Image 1 (cartoon, rainbow, N blue to C red):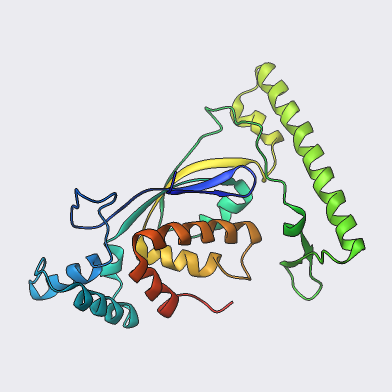
Image 2: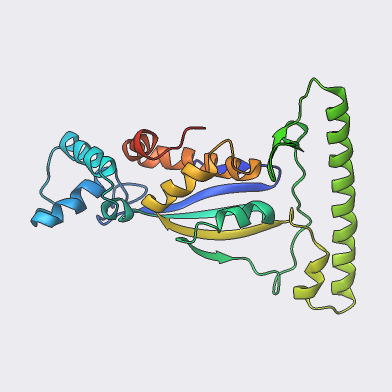
Length: 244
């Protein structure tokens, strides 16, 4: 699927739809780079004035540069995402999204939990209250620590999932049986957000200071959006992206 990117060990991001104010029956999705400029022209009652494309893209630049956000908000994005709960809770801090999430009250979750690859294991730094750095793969001590962590984490998650299944078989409600599970267990949702607020999310989550797992999901979203609205994403690079 060209609109799907696999993320981490069991996760993914799918671009289900991206739409704008103009219906385009001959395209895969309705949204186009010219949509914000076209909508902005409504201020002068010139919507659908069929200006040349290069003129519309220049207006996009003006809108982004001067923080005229409403035209950018006219593009809506629907994403299907499967991710560890610990990463999902970083994304929901961006409260401008509408979300429908699988409910572990009603659905027995599969045996899928996130185990970091060796190169993704993070060591706590001593000069920060939170956060860390990637392990040094050339440091045998840190590699040994990371390998122990990966093995023990996977073992603990496996044992917890067995107890989760046993609790359900014993008649415990799924909403309480899930208490055996860890924050690295996978959840699954559909996420809707306008492009302006999505750019705000990407600027913060696709950043070296963000949680490692959140960065992977933000990068996947970024890649999918660039296929559909390359001009607007280039303006995101120019005016919205934070320096790492």
